Length: 237
Image (cartoon, rainbow, N blue to C red; front, side, top):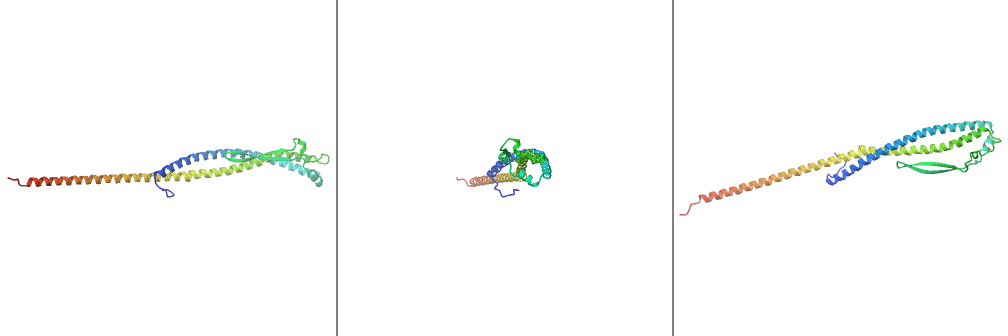
């Protein structure tokens, strides 16, 4: 039985058949999209794992160098050395479309391409460990930006995968079976109506034949009575 009240007409049947064909095509396209999104997501997850490991190693190295530099230098000298940055960074963000999902892409540009410009202090009164820490941070910056990009991409892809999965399941387990049940119900109703019409036509035909036979019998009976009356009448001499 259909889940909702529907009008069992041929127009409704044709409309449901068209919707069913469209839903089946949409279901296939959504499944293909889900599978491709899963493939892209797994690639992003693998890259995310490798990048996170590299960033954590770089940050640990920078933190260790800063710890040693803080132990060798006075707090005032360390603060003065890092108070005024010498290098400036500009960050640009664009978007890339992956299976109808706009994911961010980050590009950063430094004001100078000279590697020595990352040190905002002189080398006379600072320790070599501080140089190592600043150099480690400058090297890990690009990986951190790429990690942020990958993290956001994986989050957006996961949301789109979940959304697509819900749509696929709704079509596969709710909409398509419901339309198939409605089509079956309307087809059965139309067949039943057609059988009822056929039976009514046959009954009408039988009634017409019966009436025709009765009329013929009545005419035959009248003819017999007329012939009998004429044969019994006395002949004139």
